[in-house]
Image 1 (cartoon, rainbow, N blue to C red):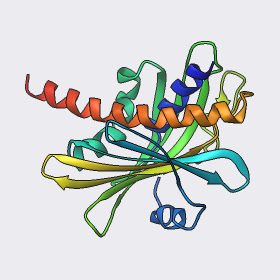
Image 2 (image 1 turned 30 degrees about the vertical axis):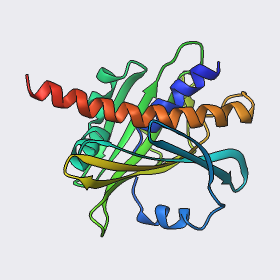
Image 3 (image 1 turned 45 degrees about the horizontal axis):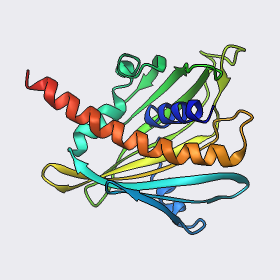
Length: 215
């Protein structure tokens, strides 16, 4: 069951991307981050979230890639079901030059299917980095049904910084509650693992697309 929850959180995190630079500014005013682990250069931290026993999680890692490659993957939403087997459906309700508003469905073995709306936006920061931030929203097109558990509490951001011509630093922050009846400590363990899996999945997809473009 814990493995299934990790799978769910990975896809929820990876395919959701909003937009308010204040989210990153407010993030600095919260509780102190506690170091959790470091593996293959990926540093993981967590902290308390006001009003909840579920932890906020952040990670920092540097690897091969460019800002544009990473951002392109974040917004290539309609291809997500083709790439990731647990994403069964994605629909972009509207889009402009900075944001998209999408509805997504996730199916995993044994666990209940989930669905969610997410507004995803690109933020060009003054220091040259680019953030992809996300927040949930609602829309009448896909009402709540018994077939899916609607995920409503999910927010965070990626911040991509080009530290070398072909190397990016990724700062990642996430807080979400996947729901369900599992103990909180299991949800927190799953969230930490999901963050790591999400960041390495992003890097793998960057490399995969590069290889395909050379054929």
